[in-house]
Image (cartoon, rainbow, N blue to C red; front, side):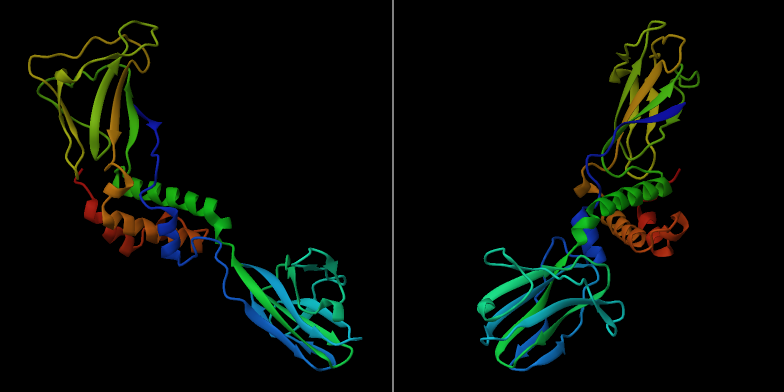
Length: 316
């Protein structure tokens, strides 16, 4: 006897958006309000902007040149830090892109007035800031750091973790959640499956059952035994039962490997039909897998998760 998955679930009991809500992650690449880092107004010398925490985000420095006095040259540097204390220049040749004309510039002078520039940070440090050096003391300039969520980069990971959580929960309950089809394979109809015997089926909750057999030795074609031969019980919380109708007999199957196949379609139905306690357990399990990438089943099946899953535990 062997079980083989024929049709996998086409959806998971919980969605990616539900998992992200549990993790308190953004569901899109939403851009946060710009974080101010530097304001320049009529001074000469060097000024270091305020450090901005950027972990988990794509950071872009935005500089708005208000007015820059004639003859004044400003040098701006995007800087990075591991501790928000010690900063180093991101590179020795920072390149700022003119947002309006896409012309690369490295020096800000009076011709930069009333223009906006940006520089994307591609490093790995958790803090960045903008630093400025002014030759004279005439002009105004403001700089911000914009943060764009990167959680969509985790979409494939989160999808995989949802599936892993679902499979672990299914193994724990010995149940299937979303509609799927399995083949239960035999070489012959079991001899004990007569009209006085109730055969316990291996999967639940059971939606339907089809019985197929190969009548000719060496044949690859299966014939249907028909549903009139058996009585099928499909309870929600316990495993289904199969019993031959009194006065009937199973068809004669060829004496060969996997001559008999029982197609079991099981699951609660669509994702919307999965009980809420199971959904709640899957959200917790997915969150644990996301935050602790080394978590095993012993860590996943916490008392809280077990309590939720046990509301749908069947009696074997």
